[in-house]
Image (cartoon, rainbow, N blue to C red; front, side, top):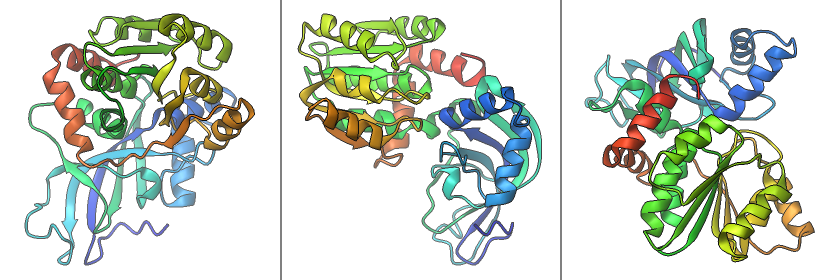
Amino acid sequence: MDATPKALENEIAVSVDALNIDSASFRQLREAESAGSGSIADQILSIVTERGKMQNPVTGSGGIFLGAVREVGPRHPDAGSLEPGTRVASLVSLTLTPLQLHRIVRVRPEMERVDVEGTAILFARTLYSRLPDDLSEEVALAAFDVAGAPASVKAEALPGQTVVIIGTGKAGLLCLAAAREAVGETGLVFALDPSERAVKRARRLPFANEVWTLDARDAVAVLTEVEKATRGDMADLVVNVANAPGTEASSVLCAKPSGTVLLFGMATSFSAAALGAEGLAHPARLLIGNGYVSGHVETALTLLRRHPELLLAFSTLASRAS
């Protein structure tokens, strides 16, 4: 990808100061660092230098950026309404965003964020958002990155249904709130995560009927808990926002035969889910999560504004280790 740091007539050039790396990608980079493949900073610099964008070659995923508008091309749709200096965040994956990094200032593993100096290019149709005035940049950036997941939950879940959410990180917390609002008090919402700390955080929120400390890579254990909690009825909607591979079988097994499995985690494999469903003779509908859903940013921000306890938990998660 051509990452020349100058806007063409229909583009926007942004001075980038932070990359919010998606959870699956950051986990892989951290594991590679532990295995001796170089520091996270060196890996990111190498990827961006080689590809002209931040696209993890293992996970295929990227994240989003935060920065200030530097230049708006005269033929860009927002020319005349977008001023240089305006703080913006991209709403399109870094895998689709031309990026040049001058240097990496700091890696923040606890936030899955990297402070940088660089330039990104936004095309005429590339989605972005101005930063809201009432939320911190850390919270807004984290919410923008996963906004498609809760918006999809609100679109798919119906009153009185049962929803199971796999993973209770940033996306998972927003999905919990979205699921509860969608199914109402007569519906059931369950969640699971291998991290006891993440589970405790989710349990403190008023959304889930139960939250289990379970590794979704153990399909039998997950199936057992969901069967017990639903008395064998299983889930109408299963939402996978896990950041680890190997959770596809659990996702499929948790769903009713007439249910839907929404695969939103970047570490999940659609082929593994599809072949697994075929092998299990399970007719659940499989959906690939779309990071863009109409109104997704406002959905995520509204959930945070409407539920103070969610905003507190999300703020903590967006600013320090989970």
